[in-house]
Image (cartoon, rainbow, N blue to C red; front, side, top):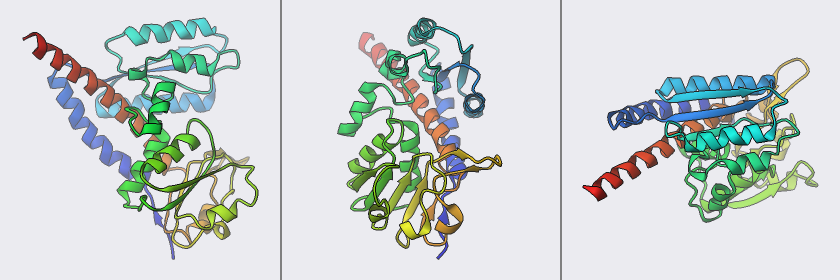
Length: 293
């Protein structure tokens, strides 16, 4: 069999068309969703990501601002900017582009963002809410994966799911989201002994460790849904994931390509979280007006 290719670009465009209508509706209520991105340093990949996020905002009619700082910028200056953005009524979502320079504490910076503007879903309050399945702003990449699975009608409830990776950004929240949908979830890492004993019985495999070719065809069962979150640049410049795509697609039932699979969904879910944050503000303002009427 040859797998159905899960097209993240196509699903993203469907979602963004719907978002444009919601942004227009907010405009009629006198509000335009706003996203602020804080970029520290001159990392080339980060520059590209930030540019793509700003373009995506413009595409759906959102306001976006990028605050760029040199790599030697102090932690105090970064925290000061976040404090200002927390109070800015034009900004509904704040994103700090990672990685930050070594002298800036990632945790301290991310925790400085008020939870209702944490559209990346990294604040401890939002991460903790995943445990109860009540997070307003789930991390963008795992939420993008869940959206793709639903769009392609991949059965989650009752399935055996394996997540390879335990990062706070993808692996851990991914496992919690699958668990919340009644999947039986196993979390593995790049150091798991005999990884195939877990992946061979999985209906869904999510690979997110940053190791090219980690998952091969002999490691999955026929018809499995294989989601590749890996993003690796080979010496020849080619961008690949964690899955040996060419061989695995001949055995899997569904598979995401790299690029063009999960990547576009990450930015789309960032837009979705920002839009939701702005709608929450608009609804709160409307409720306040009614209360004083």
